[in-house]
Length: 193
Image 1 (tube, rainbow, N blue to C red):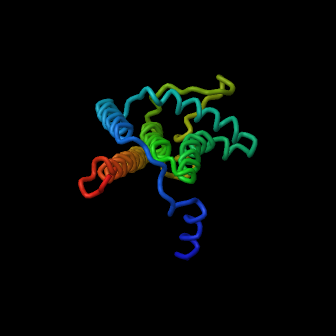
Image 2 (cartoon, helix red, strand yellow; image 1 turned 60 degrees about the horizontal axis):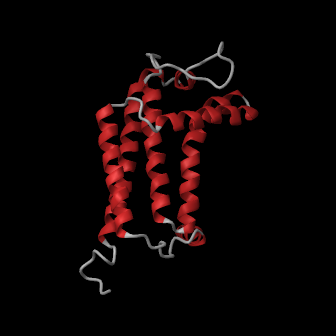
């Protein structure tokens, strides 16, 4: 099994070097991600400016997956919302473009915060709902999903777990970027120029 995983990673170029980037670009993105996390933390699960883009992709997911029946239509918003940045991250990983890869991964995990807020609202249903379809028929995705799975009483716990994983993922992206910056030839004292 490990050999297959290694072969798969090799096919994606995992052993190739990342394309070089200026240390100032790495540092600027590191500052942006740090400031964004401070902003997100201060909002305490509120609507972030990037969530407008997430909402568009989410609603597009419902329309795209509606072709595959009501269940996938219901789940399709979150599926596409998570799939878009993850697929872009996969592409940039394969291309070995580190800043684009980490940008997509960071916002993949930021989407988890948005989803967690929606999940935690499943019983209360106080969030304003948006639809790209018939405005007379609007349902709360996670109320319907959790109800069908018998998980509705756990909405806030599940939302908290998803939020925690999103924060861990965003922090991991920042740590990865810090390590990349620390290893930069111009900043590393052990590297000769």
